[in-house]
Image 1 (cartoon, rainbow, N blue to C red):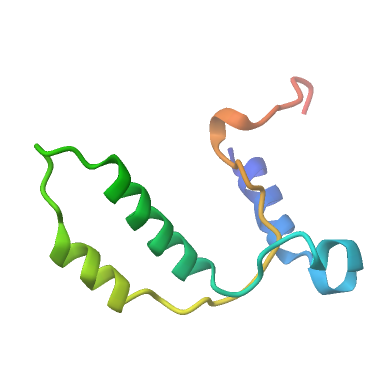
Image 2 (cartoon, rainbow, N blue to C red):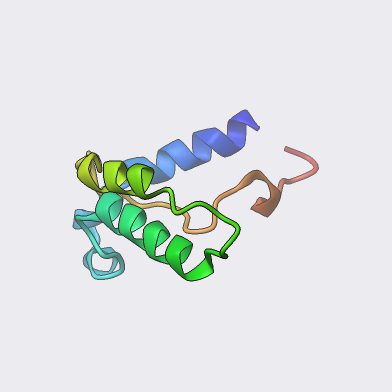
Length: 89
């Protein structure tokens, strides 16, 4: 597990600006805002009548969305069940 985390940390340290092809891959700034607004829209679309609106929580999140701290390279589908480990390493 620590090797997997170390690899993820190394990936985050790659300076994407040094690689012209990587600069155009992502969406850049606005990640936190996209996450909050995207999840809010998905919640509204999936909400059923027996589920509360969570209006206060959703409003709070909209008003308190943190600013981006850094743009970096990430693995878009990173999770422990999506890694391949070498049996001999």
